[in-house]
Image 1 (cartoon, rainbow, N blue to C red):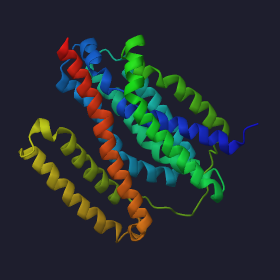
Image 2: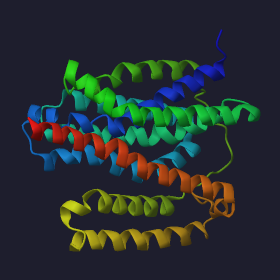
Image 3: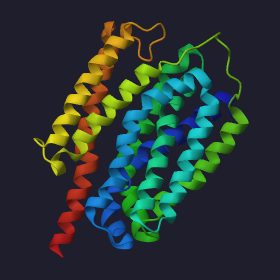
Length: 295
């Protein structure tokens, strides 16, 4: 019989798989969605980009909120939001409703992703944590890598709505498992303060930076909007670092950056993310567009 910790880790793997799958699963289905909703690519691109923008800007603050309010409870809320967003996206009759569904999905993913890592790691003894981190990391990469393949197969056989609706039964399984095996209690550590100022600053920094990276080419890299967002991102980042150095309960303790292993891991994560986006997001879109032009 499976141990409770193994069951918990399995539920966390489902959560991570769903979050990362939806970063890439939609790309190859864009032409089918554009035809199905009778919309242009400019509006449809927001259904793709809103997931990235909100995920990037909310993951850190909502991860910290889960630490304070209880990771198990927040994880269930995140899964519920992700399921609602998936159902809304799959049943949407307009691009506006699709964008709304993707936004709800992203908020749920921003809760599930950081909480799942922490819950999975803390569910086992210290000696087993390296293996858990490896398993969750492999699941993260596997989901992103399989996204275009799964998206293409589902779109071909069940239509583009299927790429969102397939999430619903997986969310239901994860919810049932979490209710059965996760603890709803959160140990009290006295009066814990939320770093609201730091949360607002990091959200603003990541939101502005992500908008620049996502829409810079469309809006123009030297346009007033993009330059303003770039300056805003830089200024709020400086303010965030200053605030984290002076608050009693920082959201991101700056002492972490004195650890070489932490810095190396962070740099490797950033670089792998950059190359992964180029390979798994841009290439499928390019190949699909090339195939359409050749017909």
